[in-house]
Length: 440
Ligand code: UDX
Image (cartoon, rainbow, N blue to C red; front, side, top):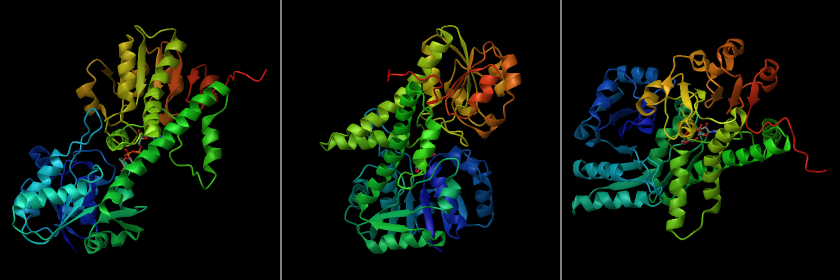
């Protein structure tokens, strides 16, 4: 059992701290946001994450998990301090490290015993070295037995607990192998492969992994667009590709592209780092461009189907960037809604979990209580996020309520044939039924 402190109770910090407590460690989670901590103390989760609340409650009750805003209480006697604060990206993609710096300086000010500082936040390659420098500089000659370890997270929102408890791998980067091994002990109960590397390589593994997954999605979206023109079905194409073990089937779902708090930020940051260091990240640029186009293409298809968008009422199903989360950061829905509003369309929308977050930024959108309210009087219905709830929709009712039976299935969730047989005009992504024959 180790004495752990986790700085930052955002998505990563909260899940990581809670899971370490569940593995029997004594964990103090610290945040400077008092509202957040006071809510957590009352058992109110700041994010929607399946299973999180139960595990938090269980470990708080057992006395293994403590929430505080008191830096002294949190870091003073910690053997291992995880930094899991936000690293928002600026316009050019450069990560803003002010919160990492604050955490590092607080550690420098308050800790005198041997400590391992573990970086969980996704940070530019070289930040681990920088954190060590920031701490030692702040000590102003007072010696501190410090080791920095980079431990990137690979948690997906919506399945973060499971991803933690059943990790594919743990990556630990440090210039001190003993320090990395000490952190590895925390993960021993998970019995997953542990890769120990140098600091910069570990930091790079995180960027490369996320950029690769985003690349797969942009790749299949590009294939989808070609399928649409040639009359092939991208769902089956992806299935056929995925059966090849060298390819695999994950992250080959064509749709409206990737969003969220990680992929957009990380691909942009990696491209920025590449440019900054004199290389030309052509593939990464294309991956981002394809992703932007995916949203524009849907709007183009809708404009064509309706013969214009001005004054049309468009119903949107799903606002969160993917199912099982209330997170709307960089959500495709936001961009699609923005594009439609720019063309004079009126938007109605519903999401099973993200309504509170949506209400804060979608001022012009009429937020509805369910899919049927969205359908009422709509000239078209767009599915943007493939929540399970949308699989069981009563399309007879939807058709009666809609002004025009036009459906844009942005995630290929519904059965094309069934909907067409019911009299809907159905458009999926990459699923053309009318090939343009260019062989004649
Ligand atoms: C991602 C990484 O998967 C995780 O390892 C990392 O640590 C954080 O970033 P997350 O952002 O929670 O996790 O979501 P993920 O499930 O990876 O999906 C990202 C985006 O890609 C979503 O917008 C999703 O809709 C989209 N996506 C995913 C597709 O469009 N097609 C796919 O086949 C898979």
